Length: 174
Image (cartoon, rainbow, N blue to C red; front, top):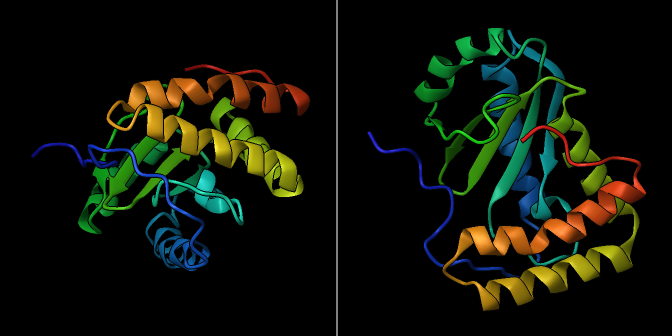
């Protein structure tokens, strides 16, 4: 079976949808049940759909804290039974799973990924001007690189790095 396709071939950034938090809550409730034996630190809404008011790809990105990265490998089968497909990303620090329109990273609280994603989300939630700047950047990059996810993602790197630096962080292990 081919890995889950997490993004469409054409990058589409759309206006903020007030249903995104509700979609997250539905997925969170299911993940908390499926991941209960491994969960430590909760399930968090991350990524642009977690920032009220900004444009984003219509994709709910989440992060779940697991007590042990290695022991969480046992979660693969229960997740797959609920429609999640393994979709590797930063495999040394996170197990990533996706299904249409949603993805989740399983990582230990305190990992580089954990700290980066929560710090970035929280900084944008706390600063409407910073969030608007990021939303405008995403719209511009989606227009310039509508069929190149790598270029789109790389175009955000300097902005993300600046926000992390302001939070006292640098990019961790990749």
